Image (cartoon, rainbow, N blue to C red; front, side, top):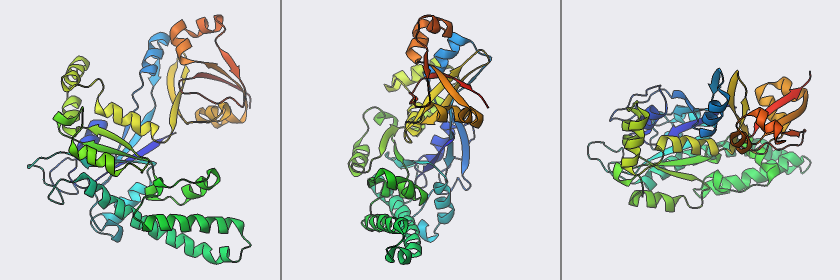
Length: 366
C-alpha cells in the first residue's frame, strides 16, 4: 500500500529544504518563488525500530521496511484557483495525494524574502485554505447541478442522499471552512471520498522554526495552534535548517550528538514521517524469515484475509488461516521456535483483526 503525501506551502517557506532532507531526490532550493516547477517525487523509508530488532534476531538475507512517497509541489500564490501562478497544476497535484503536509514559515530571516513581505503563518495558511476551498466549491456545485434534478423527483434515494450531503458541504465551504472539519455518518464517508475534495484530505501542519524554537516553539507556532483548533489536524514543530545540517552528517553518533545539543531525542524528519504515516490511520505488520524480514502497511481495522491480500491477491482468495506472533513475545523469547515452544503462536481465522506489530505467516490454497 503506497502512501502519497504532498508537501505544500507558499513560496520560500522551506518546502524544498524539507523535501531535500526527506529524500535523496534533491529539489532545487533557492530564494525565489517557484524554484520547484515540476513536482519532485521521493520514496522514503518509514523509521521503525521494530524491524531493526527483528532483523537482528532473524539475520535475514534482506530487510524491506515500509515506505512513503513524498511529492514536493510547486509553491502556491493567491488566485491559484483562478489559474494564477502555477495554480491549476498545483491543485491537480494535490488532488493526486492521500494527505497534505502544509509547511508554514514560523521564523524571521531578513535574508529570505516572503511573498507577502511579512511573517504571518496564520495568514499564509488562510491563503492556501481559501484557494482550496474555492476549488472544492466549484467541484461541489458542478456535482450538485448534475444530480439536483434527479433528486427532486424523489424517486432516486442515492441521488437524494448525494444532494443532501453536497448541500451541507457547500454551506460549510461558503463559511470559509474546510471539509475535514465536518463529521459524516459512516455510510456517507465513501460518497464524500468519491468527490476527491482537496480540503477533505488529512493534513499535517509543519511549523518551520529557527533552531532556538525547536523544543518549545514560539509565538508564531502558538498562533497556528490556536488557528487550527477545530480542524482535526496534526501540528509538528520542525526546523528545516537544522534538519538540513543533520542530513549532511553521515556518522550516526555525530547525528545523535547534534540532536542532543538541540535538546532532541529524535530528528524532526523521523517525527514528520511517522506523523505522515499515522495521518491516514495506517499501521504495520511484519513477515519474518531467513530470506526476508519485511514491513507491510495496512489500514487500521482490517482482517487477516485482507492483510494477506496486501502480499498477493492469491493469499486473500485462498486464505485458510494466519499464524500470528505478537511483537513483544517474539522479541522477549528471541526466535519463532522459542515462541512456538512457549505456546505463544496463535492460529487465527478470517475474522481476526490485525494488530500493529503482528508478525504473521499466512496459509492459503488456490
